[in-house]
Image 1 (cartoon, helix red, strand yellow):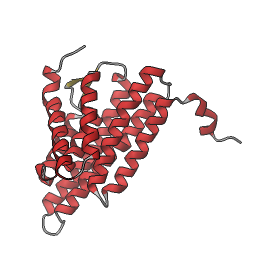
Image 2 (cartoon, one colour):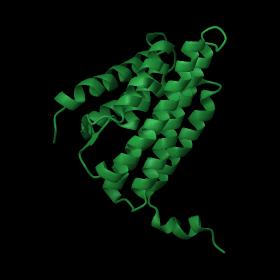
Image 3 (cartoon, rainbow, N blue to C red):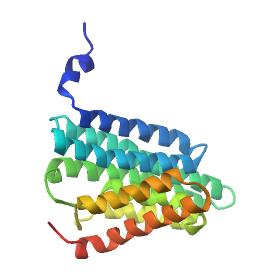
Length: 230
């Protein structure tokens, strides 16, 4: 008997293959977070680039009915679980349960809340906002990008600020604040900055990571009110 995956493979497209690779990158990022947070952050940014690429491919060559469901499932792994484990790993490296119990507890609770809100946000997006040019709540991809860039920014962002950002993003993902989709040229610029933050190491990499963090935070706080609509 032929496996169901093989029988339905013909119904999946190129965009779906990129989406599945996004999920695999999320798993690799989660594993890497336990041993090398900077590598995990780079993998999350790569997953974010793949997430943008699958949308471009779907618009150019067409998507499939399974695409929106695969996309949300992949996003849970790459932009929900992986960044949460990344933050928790940074917390474990900075604080201990014995010496800073309250900070440690907050540093673990906030990533757990982040995962829960990411799942809620992705479910609502798939049900109600999938075809719209804007969406309620911060995009999980943006939230994960902010956290990954914060880790790569090195001395620019400490563990306390990272945990605070995690809590803030968890709350913003389920608000009714309306976030417009990025225009293609803006998404391209952010993709280039992301790529440089991933490829470069040392101080240059930290500079581009901080630049990515600055741009992402600017959209986070100013996008709903000032970002131009189509």
